[in-house]
Image 1 (tube, protein in one colour):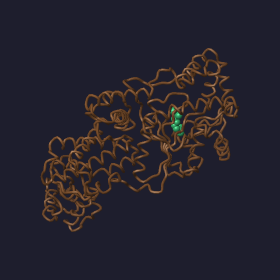
Image 2 (cartoon, protein in one colour):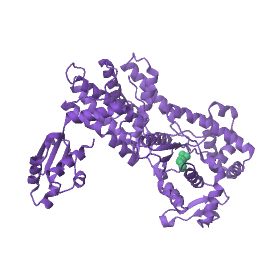
Image 3 (cartoon, rainbow, N blue to C red):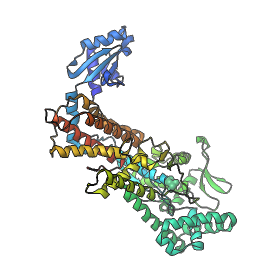
Image 4 (spheres, helix red, strand yellow):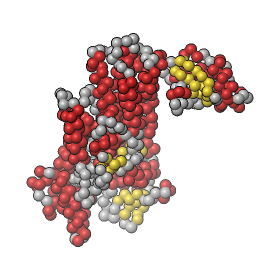
Length: 563
Ligand code: ARG
């Protein structure tokens, strides 16, 4: 039910449709304080047309309006304030939720449309960093939000598994590597070789030449180079998949950069045919000065392809394979310029959906104030952070709820949920510093706080002994519940807004508001009191449980029934 519409209709009626409902609709406001009602109409906007003082217009509207559908309609200065009918609204909202359950808020705008999401995309033979964590959880949540809005999504992990760095890695491995070490702890040792390469090549420029040759061999399909590369890729993927499993994130495809190795000649051909390639100091570039961007380097002077060459091939492949309405790249904001270049090249090439290419940037992440860098070997590993978080959650549960039957499972849900929520709760473009202890608190703006509100609502329902609630809810007129009802009613709007802005934080912030409002209600009301409104209060508790769980699901976080 659209209560704005209800108010707009009533106002239009009261002034004999001198102004259309549509015009009024857009002007309806939400008062800042609850004392001023739920919705308000600023009567002063009619002053010119009606040649009257705003206060008088407001008073006239109140005198003429059919107020029977509202609890109260009052004029305050130039405003008409509407107090919605709490009984009717609560019954309507809760019935919708109890009927639709987890489908409450589903929206079909995206029906029959596909969106590709380029996400996570760590680099082979390097550890997954906290930055890749951000891409993984933001991308995953955006995918859930899009699906809630009716779209089909293709989550593609564009692994960094190709490029000159593999020439370096092969060179380093053949010089200093040890097979058993790599088998024992692959990423740790591969990083060591890589770091060593960068130290040594300062003294010995020959190394760079060797590395270039190895990459060339790899591009040409040389068996030795290919075998080593495949091995590095294999062991790295195994490690990444462990992390994805812990995070509860899966992908539809893992088409890394190497997947496009045989699709790059076509890119170069098209660019040539369209007259877009120019020579610059032996290299091939696309001039982007029209777009105020630096030229895009397509081929190095030795003919080697680059990151952007592979990305152009990727965009073409996605276009042909999925015909997506949008092609999203969830990648840190440090690559913003790069994605401007990519989009500009695709537009010049006339790629059909170049306009649907969107970079979804996000800010830096530090942990306990520490930066992350692979080169210098000074890194914070995502796995370590996850393990630590789960261990801390375990300890908290052991103190708070020692009798919990499935302690380990819940500790994982809480520990992982804390990290995901900590990442998603502020606008993605913001940088975040992660202090694990803070994210794990059961109080404050945390994942465990929202999970706990959900578990509490489930526990009330268990205590009530009512297994199934009617789909048709009862009227709840209790003043204390009104804030909760209004938030529940707002959920479908939040689902759309998060989709429009590709912003999981809209959902995270909403879940915090709902959890907070519910906890406040719980603190002030006796829910399990045997009176006339008990059934209505249980309807509310169930509705809150459903919407909190669904909000967490949209963020990629589990909601245990007990914790
Ligand atoms: N592997 C890259 C990195 O770690 C991210 C790739 C992003 N996706 C893309 N299509 N360029 O920085």
